Length: 112
Image 1: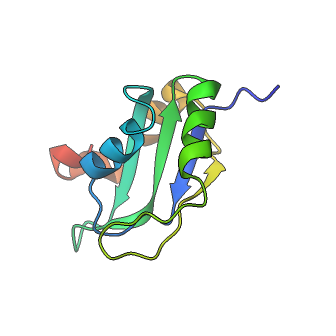
Image 2: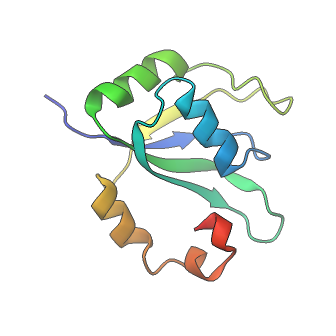
């Protein structure tokens, strides 16, 4: 039985914000994630196409994957299709530790 709950969501439309992504996830799994980090390009203010997300349970992750994996985003005139893979770091605590000393902490508070 696979107990991993942390994924990298890939092929995110570059104009999408962290709040857009959170809404997109919560349309399927309301309040069922406890960590989201959408990687941003500090120069242009757009995301770079991937995010780390930790779902609270494996069932939450599976529910999201069944609903969204392999489906076009259908926003921002993007033809991108959502892909996911398991993240190297698993769980909220491991993600917090990984990003604790990241350069993101020196950027806009909204991006932390």
